[in-house]
Length: 261
Image 1 (cartoon, rainbow, N blue to C red):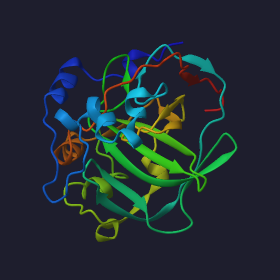
Image 2: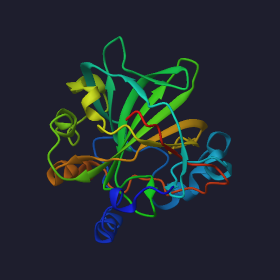
Image 3: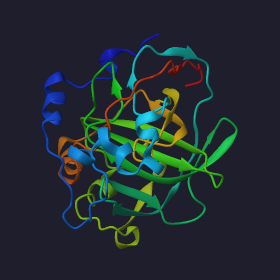
């Protein structure tokens, strides 16, 4: 079963407009050795640091991917233990992140494993494509166990009504420093997620160097909405910070067909 195209697409005009936006990096944040353009862009990541970034070129389970041709599978819905707590916003030189500043930390239960929430960051346009098209923004909820297991939850953003739950973060995107404690906010983490729990899932990798594999990807099929003004805040901070989609190499993309929605 394929995901309905009209539920997961932005216009071709919108995609084209996003494609021509230049990468915008805060001058206050020191640049790193890799980037999204030119001689340090995705096609060259593996050569920048061959000892640590080799998978960026040689990996066979890389992310992001174009989501299409999904296979229905009954899967247990993701279980989030998200509450309201203090968070810190910071600019890492490639995107802007927000991380929990208090314990106990927010968690995700998946496949019998509990993953603590490490941070949330964004890519504009979306890194994952759906039937060959991008959303304006994609948010990545990165979870990691003490043993190093990683599960990432992807949330697409489309233009629509303003999103009050995300406002504390969005309002700090363009002014955040490199230190999370410099920009504290309060977030109701549970309200940051889509209300419809349907996801697609596949085995992939980190989308930044060193492109480590073994990552459990869970991408919500229903986007959240933000106002165009809110989306523009993301684009003002970073635009074009998305790795191109990677080959599937025979991997299955599963569409959750669980009846308990």
